[in-house]
Amino acid sequence: MIVIFGSLNIDLVARVPVIPGPGRTVLAPSYETHFGGKGANQAVAAARLAGPGNVRMAGRVGHDGFGEDAIGNLAANGVETGLIVRGSEPTGCAFITVDASGENAITVASGANLAATAADLPSAIFRADTVLVLQMEVPFEQSLRAARLAKSAGAQIVWNLAPVPAAMSVTMLRDLLDVTGFLIVNEHEAIDAAARLGTPETSFEAAAALLAKAGRLTCVVTAGAQGAYAATADGRLLHVSAPTITPVDTTGAGDTFVGAFACMLGEQAPLQLALEVGCEAAALSCLRIGAQAAMPVRSAVTALTDRR
Ligand code: RIB
Image (tube, rainbow, N blue to C red; front, top):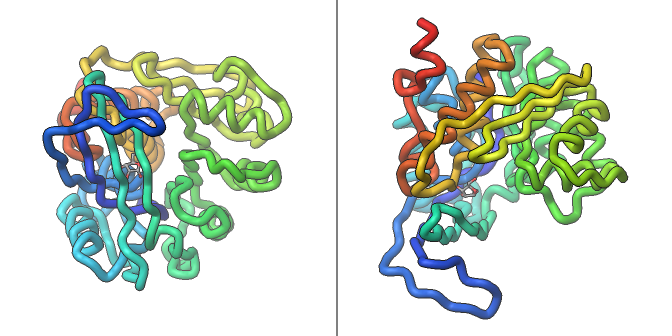
C-alpha cells in the first residue's frame, strides 16, 4: 500500500503570454479549475499506475464544495479517502499562471492543509510493505511524526522536499534526512538543501551526492527535459533521460514523477526502472493543462508495457 500524507488543493489556472513580475498585471482570456495539491497529485499519479485500492490519501480539507470535490476526485481515481479529515478551515487553493512555453508560477493559499495532523493516522496503516510519501505543503513536524511512525513499522519513506520552506533549519533538514529512504528534489531544491547543510554546491549532482551521503539515503533529482538523476549513499550516480515532448503545462510534472516512483518502489522495482517510469510518466503529464489531466495510466507507460 502507498500512503500519501499531504496537501489537497483546488487549482485556479490562467494561461498568460508572460508570467507577470512584481507590480505587473496581465490579462488572461479565462481560467480553468483543476484538482491539485502536491499530495493529491502524487496520490492520483500513483493510483493511475498502481490501480484502485493500492493508494491511500491522508490530509485535510474544509467543509466546503472544494473539499467535497477534491475528495470525490481522489475516489474517482481509485484512491482510498477515509483518512481525509474535514475541518473548519477553507480547502487549500492554488493560483497558477501558465505561460506560452508551459512554465508556471504558483501561489498556494494553504487553508486546511496547515491544520493537517499525523494524529489522524492510525499506526496500524503502516507495515513493512508500506511506502509513505510526504511533501512540504502540510506542517513539517506532522510529516516528521508520520515518517517516524511509519519507519518504526519498517515502511519505506519517500520525501519530496518541495517547496523548500524559507525557514527550514539545519535541524529540520537533518531530522528529515534521518528518516527518509528516498529524497526527491528538483535541481534548485537540491542546491538549496545542500547549502542549508553548510556546504554550498554549484551543481545539483554534487548537491545530491552530499545529501545522499549526509542522510545515508538515495537522493533523486528531477531535472525536467534532462530526465532524472539518483545519487546513492554508496556514491553511485545514475541518470535516466526524459522522452522529448513539447510541454503544454508542466504543473504537477514533479508530482507525477514522485507518485510513479513510489508506485514502482511499492512493487520492489529496481531503482533504474523506477526512474524510467517516473520520467516517462512526468513527461506525459505535461501534454495537457492541469496537474492531473494528463497523468498516464499504466498501459500508456512504455517503460512498463515494453517489459511484458
Ligand atoms: O506541484 C503542483 C501543485 O503545487 C499544484 O497542483 C498546486 O496545487 C500546488 O500545490
